[in-house]
Amino acid sequence: MGDISVHLVDRGRVHADMGYVLDGYSMGSASNPNPDHEMAEFVVWNAVIDGSDQTLLWDTGSNPDAGNGYWPAPLYEAFSHVDAAEHTLEADLDAVGYSIADIDGVVMSHLHLDHAGGLAEFAGTDVPVYVHEEELKFAYYSAKTTEGSIAYLASDFDHELNWNVVHGDEHTLFDGFRLYHLPGHTPGVMGAHIETPEGDVLIAGDECYVEGNYTDEVPLGPGLLWSDRHWFDSLQKVKELERRTGGDVLFGHDLDRFRSFDGGWNV
Image 1 (cartoon, helix red, strand yellow):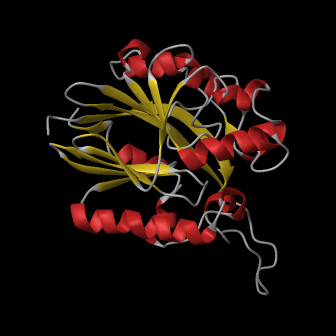
Image 2 (cartoon, one colour):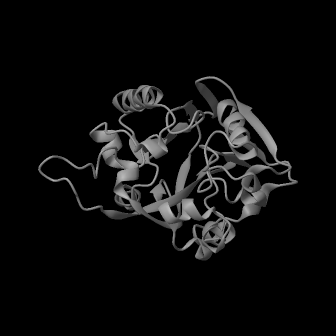
């Protein structure tokens, strides 16, 4: 295995109710029938995984026009990407020393609108875009019918892209970089195990929005959960990887956790 570096790319902030990300967070009770709701700040991030012979991008963030009518109004009301306009993929990659032209492949953890909003940058190119089979099916099902989930926009991913479909539970991209199927949040969420000279990195992604999903095993709120049973099984898979490797676990939108890694590993 050659040297691998992981550079974290800050793509801005989303404001949302904690009740969306931790099930039961704002539930009323007999003694407190009208609990206060807590709005919190969450991070949207990408990562550049730089291997010995290829450079891969993890996710592509939100479309910069998210707050200007590109996202459906009900979704933006619930999950406001307040600074999306300030975070183009090109500019944010440049901030960590890369350009879109440097990217040899894109790994999509899933195709929700805060992850797939920059895919159009790779339309009409031969850059491979890795996505799990179950995610691609559900994304098109959701975006092209009235069924499924509102969080998929065809305009994000219905392009002439070089799809590379990932099947099954595990897929090795190159030595030291392996993908894992982690269904629960959506049918096709993928995480990763990346081995760097500075230690192992485990990307849980939106399997765990915040640390409470992981440490306390509190599920995502119902609006963010495709399958509770699958989510719990995927959580145990990530925890077993952590026990086996001692790796740092990177959550999907936890701002404090993101900041704690200070830009990445072996950078």
